[in-house]
Amino acid sequence: MIAGTFAGLAIITLGAIAFLMNREVSRMVRNDVQASGNFLSYVLNKDSVQLTKELQLLARQPGLKQYVLGNDTITRPDYQTVADYAKEWLLSLDAYSAMITDSHGSVLGQTDTPASFTPFISKEKGVKEALEGRVWSGVEIRDNRIVLAVTVPVSVGEYAQGTVTAFRSVDASLAHELKKALGTDIAFVSGGKVMGSSLVLPNHIPTPQGYPLSVQITGKSYLALYAPFPNALLKSDLGFVTIRSYGDAIAPYLCFQKILGGILAVALLLGLAVGATVSRGVTQPLDEVVGAARLVSQGDWPQTIEVTRTDEIGLLQRVFNQMTVSLRKSQEHLLGLIDTDLLTGLDNHRRFQERLEQEVLRCALSEEPLSLLLFDLDHFQEYNRYYGHTEGDNTLKRVASLLEENLPEVAIL
Image (cartoon, rainbow, N blue to C red; front, side, top):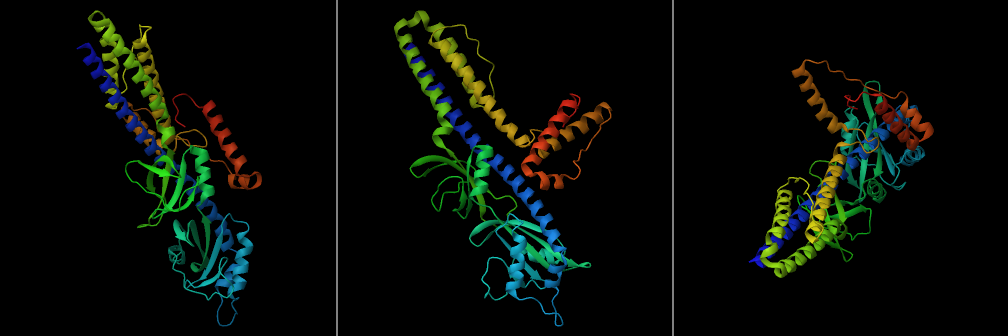
């Protein structure tokens, strides 16, 4: 009976740990996708704003306006002349290609086409938007690569007389940047075809959605999960896949599972040897562990088990306590990445909206005043251009730290 009891407890505990392991690993991968999507959206938005400002400066140049305004009395430069002009200012942009059109959407010059190429009417969505006077940006497939495209109008008076577009590649270099920031490998895909990745991959990989899938890549097991690309065109099959080594993901839990299995086996042998005289002293602490494991499997965090023994059962309790603390810290850390700005460590926009709503409600109920201070760094664009974006980022960190040191404890930054 004692042996059966111990065996049943061992099965329940190991089953609970296995369930917990699968659930936490799945949550880890989903958090990878959410953090990667947030960071990718941040990078694309930042690049889009930068390209927009630089293209708007170009669109105001008289030379470009003369190119798009050509008519019967003024000879419009030929295709290659406009393309050469675009290549000159392309050197100042972190983009691989640029395109200029007239007011009909006809391409006047493009940096990545031959000189003998016949001009054509552009089908780019951004050209249509810009000819209506609006700036457009988005992620799309072009020249068999994923690109961030930004199109701005070239206006003469109140009307758009042409457009200028820049294309920036979304490729392996950005994937490596995300890997460095988040520690997770990522691949950009279109219909399952790999368009850029932080690790060596075959041309096509699975794109599981909703729940992580174990996949084999170059003979190794990985956990993969797909998500749509932020800022991509509607009905687009563009997306990204986060890829985490299966062995690395389950290593902490597998190690604990082995230790726990060994401890339970020892406890079973002790139960058989000692018999009824120690059954109560053995089963009671194991019941505590099983109860705590059940709480964990249900999504709750149990109270720390009081350890009063120095034998294998006490070791089991200590290891279980350490595991739950470690899992809870890991979960809080991952959740913190969702609510925290990666650069400054302050609350991000999503978390700010939550906190603001809470404070408005609290102050309304307590009839206390609510103050909102907005800080802006003057001429920060010029600072970045003069000192570089790395120093600009360091300045943002210093400003955030300075504000944290001087704000009262009740303030939310």
